[in-house]
Length: 207
Image (cartoon, rainbow, N blue to C red; front, top):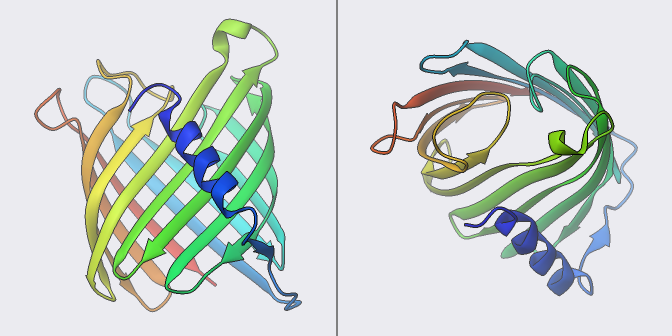
């Protein structure tokens, strides 16, 4: 996948679905989620990347820390769309403000496409660094997963980030996740066979 491959894929999916996607039907109910990704990086610092999300009808709110870079926070507002059942599409275009060690404005997106027991998920953002154009960067996290049973999923993951450095611009890996009621646990191994592996453990709670 090229530097902007995930963005192009997202735009293609979005364009093809514009005639079918609709805003979510109002429910007047807030939905919240919290997650924490713990990174164990060889020859670099280990760190935790927390994310908080809140959704109500079409409105999506989000806050991240240590995502764009270390000691950097970002806040987001987005618009939720959903379409289809057998072929389920969820799309959230977003706009974010980034501050801390990195300062900038970031358009972004979340998109998922699910059919049967397979799901393609991608989230990305392009940070326009207001201090230096050389600091602008496209971030991406994408997963292709298969769920043989409801509480288990496995698959492939890629990541592009500046939070830490490896010899690979786009990191590739494997994932294994389990869920129980409102809790989700997952483990990821990046760069196995290409470089010293980076291991990530995540926990997420929906409420």
